[in-house]
Amino acid sequence: MIILGIESSCDDTAVALYRPGLAEPFCEVVSRQYQIHDPYGGVVPELASRSHLEAIPNITRELLKKADVKMSDVNLIAATNGPGLTGALIVGLTFAKGLALSARKPFVPVNHIEAHMFAATAENEVEYPFLALVISGGHTLLAIVRDTDDYEIIGRTRDDAAGEALDKGAKILGLPMPGGLNLALRAEKGQRGTPDGTRFPRAYLKPSFDFSFSGVKTALLYHVQKNPPKTEEALCNVAADYVEAIMDVLVKKTIKAAREFKVKTIVVGGGVSSNSRLREMFKNRVRGGKDAIKVIFPSLPLCTDNARMIAARGRQVFEKKGPGDLGADVFSTFVN
Ligand code: KG4
Ligand code: ZN
Image (cartoon, rainbow, N blue to C red; front, side):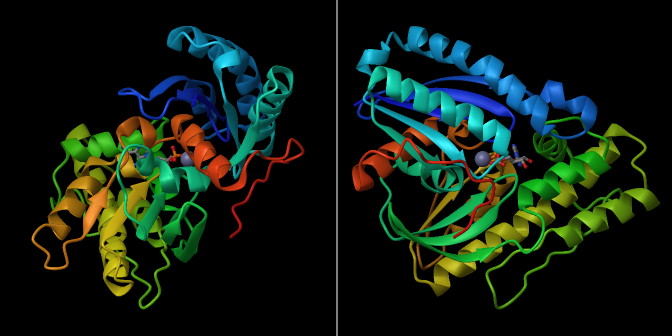
């Protein structure tokens, strides 16, 4: 089976082919836009839509050529229909529907958050139920996942998402887009617990499994206003303390939820799951624990926005529900 996945929910246009069972099941072409948006300090929706429109036919052609696959060999077309920027989503979804109609292929709309939630299952044998931690730019949530079509959200952010706090933190520190990644790279070089930084606050919101990251972001703003980092080294040190505070909450709350709900497997997904410190902290915390919790991360190309996970999730949706409706519309907000 060959699945074509199409992703255009924010500022990356991505198309991928998924061939389950092959040693290298994915082939992908991505067109990134951050250079277009960087002068404005954030994603400009109108520019994003226009850029998707320009990129999508070209990268699809490039993908088929790269993989040596003809459109007639594709068995299923999957495209993100939300949540995301409305105009950006319309471009990818409409392109996918047009392709499905003209090539007479079945089509499925894919929920972007669910694609992050199940991304690691495309590459790993994962036992159900598992606890999913989805940490993207706009969403932070914990869910008990019982099957590919059965999950229950047990916690979500009450304000900023973890990724958003990293992006806004990058802005506070004067770093260019992609902010979260640039901040994380500085944090990797920095040292925690130096006089340049501070112990940033952690919001645990006990006993709920909800999150809050707006306080830590404000604490960074005040800290930097009072102690502007004068050297690159000082900036890296502040970044290290900031990243530590965010990851600390994510890791502790997730492990606590796994214990409380008696789930043995944690599956992480979303852009923030590519963070090296987060991976290290999870490993350190579950190592040697008597309840033997296993933490599974997607490989890096499946963490940040990508079309591989859209194709893989498209397959799961198709297996449970069959072909989707060509009348499916886009949606901007994740409601569950
Ligand atoms: O899943 P994603 O690519 O897009 C959304 O669906 O939003 O997640 C984007 C988020 C951004 O907020 C960015 O700050 C974060 O992922 N991110 C990272 C890293 N790379 C991207 N956060 C921490 N460490 C990274 N290496
Ligand atoms: Zn995403």
